[in-house]
Image (cartoon, rainbow, N blue to C red; front, side, top):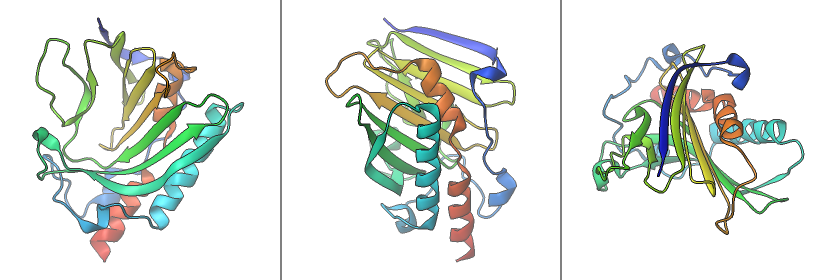
Length: 220
C-alpha cells in the first residue's frame, strides 16, 4: 500500500532549481484554467523550440547521471494530452515530450515540459478507488510504495510516486509550468535511481522553450 506524505519545505540542497521564464513572457494568449483547445501547432510537431528543449534536457541528464549515457527513443516534440475527464475531448494540456533509454541499465524514461492550463498541482490519491482525474499529472495508486509532495524554498512544488520498478516525479513551478519525469525498468525490476534523484532532475528541467513556443504562436 502506498504511503503518502506532504512537507512544507525541503532543503534547498535537494535540487538546484532553475526557474523557467516568467508568466509575463506569455501574457498573450491568456492561460485557460481548464485547459487549451486542440491545436495543429501542438500535434506531434518538431521545430526550433523542441530542438532547444531536447538539447537542454539531454544536458541535464548528462549532468545528473555522469556515469550513464542516453539514447533518444523519441526526439522532443510538441504534443497534447487530449484525454482529460477520460474522453478524447477538449480542453487539453500542451507539452513537449522526449523519451530516452539508459545504455548501461536498459531502463527507459519519459520527460515532459508542460504549459500551464488544465493542470492540478500535486498528486491525486486514488488508493481508495477514486476515479482518475486527468487534470492531475501524477496519481498515487494502491500498488505504489511511496507517494508524496514537498514545497521547495523558492515555491516550486515537487511531487512523486514509486513502486520500486518506476519513479515518476513532477516539478510545479511558480509560473504555472510543469516538468515531469517517468523513469522505469522495462523488465519490472527495481530501478537504479532514487526518488530524490528523479525529483531533483524534474526540478532542474527548463520549461522556458514551451513559453517561447507559445509566444511565437501568438505572434504568427
